[in-house]
Image (cartoon, rainbow, N blue to C red; front, side):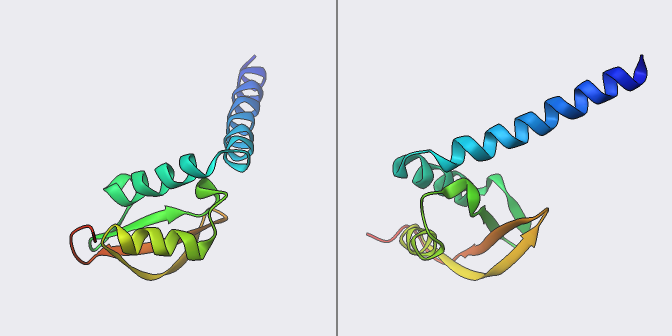
Length: 99
């Protein structure tokens, strides 16, 4: 019985992860921008005042578009990191939101 429950729980988590990626793949540009802004607002803190933006969640935005959006929001790109198989871009706040 425990194996069955564990198997069902594992399948549910895998389905959730897969659906999250599929929905991100077909989202609108506005939703991708919203995702980047949420990450920059501090949802994913990396430490030392840095925030991380998960690239696949920002689809259809490219890395360059994410960096430009972050620059306009007052952040500076500090580097890339791969965590749990996902590319993440790290930013640090430099100033208030530019014009």
